[in-house]
Image (cartoon, rainbow, N blue to C red; front, side):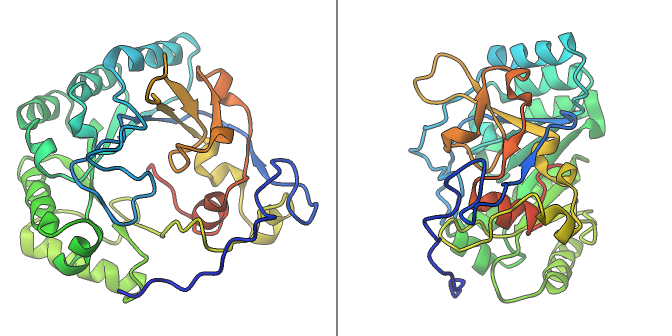
Length: 316
């Protein structure tokens, strides 16, 4: 698989949160309504992927395991302030490595939220099979599992993740389908060998062969994410771009979502603007959801490439 051609990022860009390198007013995104709260359960993962944007691995604990008690504080804040949160999403690392995940899911679902878990559907997930089945029986389709399957072929998926991971992920996906879980799939659009239509057709053939009922024409049921290459040159987003691109800032993830993380060694969790930028301190907005409700300056290449120009979103 050939690497995409890139140019080095202009070092004068993405330096000032207020203005671009050309002196134009940088675009910001206000929190229109907090609809989705993401929880990073920790950066530890059972595998190491080549292009993991968060650098998850069996050794990276830069983001520590968050506990059910810590999450409960944010759920209480949502209830106290009557925030319009509809969904709690769990990402990692591999969320099922966090032993508190079933308890967190139970509390989230019992409070009436939808829950979304991003998983590689490998052994850590299957270790929680009994708890998952109990949650499925009690809460039905309000629990969704989004399985990472980078490509519809084992060759390219395993090239990204590790040899044999495709078979294990597909086995987990088939188990979820047999048990009646609401299941989505996340793939990558950056392999450079097929257009989107061909990718979706390839996944459709795979799912039909394996009896996996996922509508590959639905961009939520099958999300194809663009690559996030921080070294590739991208334009900065100015206030004028909204009109030029005919795009509303309300369509961006940071207009309706925040993410909670627990940094290694920290006394308490913090709230970030975005799931894609867990390590950049300028996107850490405070310790509470109220503190994190301030506008977000689009002062990172991912803001341009992935969210504004790529048009991607992490939730439904």
